[in-house]
Image 1 (cartoon, one colour):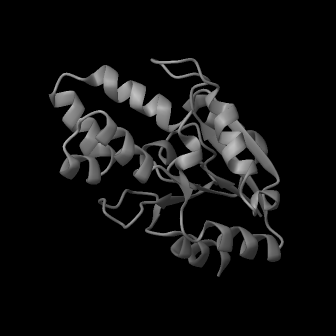
Image 2 (cartoon, rainbow, N blue to C red):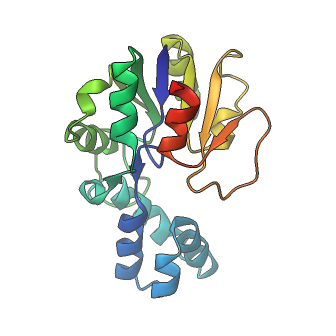
Length: 195
């Protein structure tokens, strides 16, 4: 079986990075600690959309070394490899930030991934510049299953009809979506795919 995996906010967690960036931008501590969506909403209501856009570029670029891998990712990859499954990372992000200093966001992600002790267990790593290209790559690879944190992406009509879609809704905080298997942690991903 070929298991496809999204990268940003699926494998890699940016919560602490966004909290630090928000504090540096003068966002109230309670809002900064409430997470990325709260930070975005606060900056938008303050008319600071450009600050939010620049913050994203920093988080996914120059501050990427501060991001952490979600608990359970390494264990899942080891178990999947031991079971004989192949794995591919397929993610999308722009090549450069929309605002702020030029930075190769694909190179930042590759460097982050290469530094993980279990990176060797993943057969292929692809970063695409659009969601359409990401969907096309998943089809071309003929993934049997795909794990992503964005339910909106998993419901795209241009994904293969036979693709098994695992929606990693960290903490299971959202309403269930039709046609998706909703899980709340990497332990639940392993239970859904490997048992």
